Length: 199
Image (cartoon, rainbow, N blue to C red; front, side, top):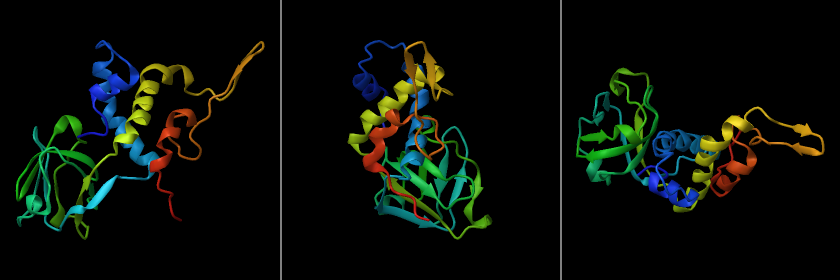
């Protein structure tokens, strides 16, 4: 399941009609990637993890990850799980499993990144990890706030650091040092999940 659903966003933002539904659905994976980058946290649980040197990624309408040896369901992966792929050349990122079988994971296209064809054995990598991801429920209000900003405020606040008109003045502060284009007041709710970068 992605970091937040359309229903969650509408409930948290008190949207009762479908005016923004299409844009919200499009923004969810984008904002999910931003949350991972801002927090330096993939929300990975390595109690369910698979490692392979022979995985084959296939792009298609229903993209797949295939392994030579059984292990995906034996390691605990299930339909609907989010996974973090890391160590590949072309396919690192968070994806969602549509169907899990012993040697094949089929991914959900609309909730996942774009899968590129890749044969790990042919790449200059030692191996690829596939790790179960679980996003905490408590992060949803902060994610909904980011989506609200993208829907309603980004156009008017982007690029403004200070503005004065007569006795009125306003300043918008960016998230310090993150290089990601959300003001502090929007992403501050992510603070409990930030993992400090080392080095």
